[in-house]
Length: 326
Image (tube, rainbow, N blue to C red; front, top):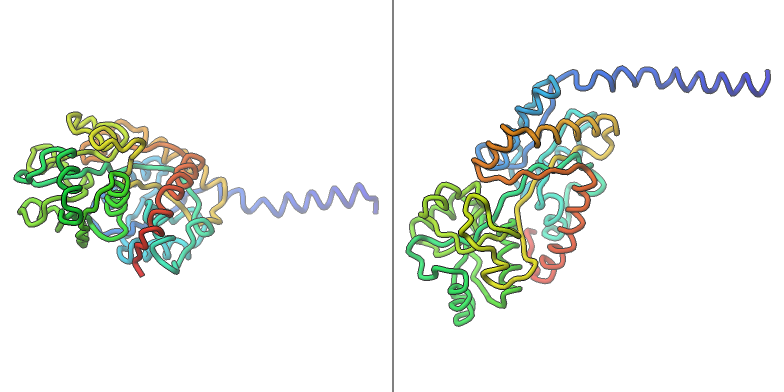
């Protein structure tokens, strides 16, 4: 048998072996997708997933079913996704806690952010505010700075919990401003906000989706926004860069979509395209703005670039301050 014939048969065999995969990829998706959310139903993360999932379902032609797996600082949901089949039918809302903070907050994780997950695309970020009750003595961020420097550690500042974006933003802001605040961690934004409204706690770092109604009406006073620029909804609220002189400071809670690492390229590419189209949808963007979310756009490359910046900023801070959830 000639060398040419052997080569021809080898190529033909390889082509035939690949044929069964083509219909499977071409038919994707042919059943419902499971979207795991590592937070309880009804919160901002769950609301975002349901909003984006409804639009994504129309584009993919299949139902997108939200499955809430809250607990352990997102570790329960993340582990479920890391161990799921990489077939394109399981997606996950991953935030800066899951992909960045937890690697320093825990000695051991049931997943590896780099080894187990593959970025699909970015979705949204939650603006953060330094907020006080309507009767608080500090009316501006500069007044807060003066009081905090005069009495280090005497001013309580609530957050939704240890290791949350809110807590770490507060610690970074305090370090860069040269002040010391007394951190009061709560189990979620809602109970902290309730105590802020009641006057039990004087100040908190509040995300916009949790407190938009109160910030808009003035029941909660925003001293500063932790974003790089003022928020369109509240243009009179200064940034911490301007009000505290913290050059280059910005902090958010942000979220994106990931899938198990071994998910095939063709399926990830399709999910990336459809997610990007969803995030450009005017109706989706309008609803996100209404509930206090800023739309993020960008595929895997932009997602990876964000992760690199976030790790360089937050991991040294967590380790230097010895913040832990173990």
